[in-house]
Length: 399
Image (tube, rainbow, N blue to C red):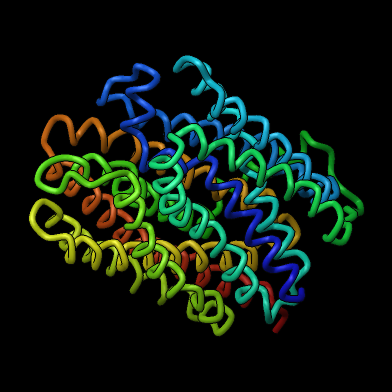
C-alpha cells in the first residue's frame, strides 16, 4: 500500500462514518426544525447506529465473497442517497428514514478496513490499520467542527448535502484508483452468515467485542450529550463553537495512531489495558463541564486517545486471529460497536433531561469501568484457553 491508497481509504472511512455522527453538534436545531422533543433527540444518532447494525450483519460479510473495491463504490453511492434524503426531509420520519439508510450502507467503513487488512503485509498490517482507522475518528470528530460551521452559515441541512456530494465523488474515485480485489474459492452467502454467528462463541472475539461495546457506549455518551449542556447556562455556546471541541478529540485520537505499530510489536493487550484506564480517568475531568472548559478539553483528549488506541488494537488482534475471513470478523466485531454507540446516544439525552450533566457523567464512567473489568477478565480467560490448548497438544504428541 502506498500513501495515496492509504489516504483514499482513510477519507472513505471518514466520510462514511460522518454520515452517522454529523448530527451530534446540531441535535437542537434538527429537533426544532422537525418537531422532535429534547428527550428524543438522541434518536437522530441512534437511528443511524441501528441501521449500521443491520448493515454489519447483512452486508459486511459480502466482502469475503465479492470484489471489495466494487462493494466500497456501491455502498458509498447509497450513503450519498441516504444523506441526500436527510438533507431534504420535510418531516421527522423522512429524516429518520434517510439516516437509517445512510447508516446501513455506512458499513462501507468495515469493508474498507477488511480490504486494508487483506492487502497489507503482516508486518505492516497494524500500521496500515492505524492510518486507515484514523479516518474513522477524523470523520466522527472532524465532522463536528465542519458541521458546526456549516450549520451556522446555511443551517443543519447543508451538512448532509455536503456529505452526499462527497460520498458520490468518492464512489467514482474508488472505482478508478483502487486495484481490484477478486475473491477466490468463496463460500455461499448462507455459510458466510453462519460463520458470522459462530464467532460469538470464540473467547478472543467475544472478549474484544464486549470491550468495544462498553468503549463506544462511553464514547457515544460524551459526544451525543455534550452539546446540550454547552448550549445552555452558563456557557451558551453556538453550534460552531460546540463543534470546535471536536478538535480536542481529534488531537487525542490522532495521538493514538501509533497504537497499530504497538500491536505489530506484540503489545496489543497491554495497550488496551492502559488505554481503558485512561478512558475511566477521562470522565473525572469531563464531569467538571459545568464549571471548567479546560478540564473538559483535557477529558475529551484523554477519552478519544483511549478509544482510538483500543479500537485499533482490537481490530489488529482480530484480523490476525482470523486472517481468512477479515470482512466477516470485522463486521461481527462492529456489531458490538454499533449497539454500544446506539445505547450511549439514546441514554445520554434521556439522562441529561432527568439529572443534568451528572447523569451522563456517571453513565460514561460506569461504562468505562465495565470495559476495564471485561479486559481483565478476558485476559485471564484467553490465557487459560491458550494454556489448555498447549496441554492438549502435549498430550497428543508422540513420545
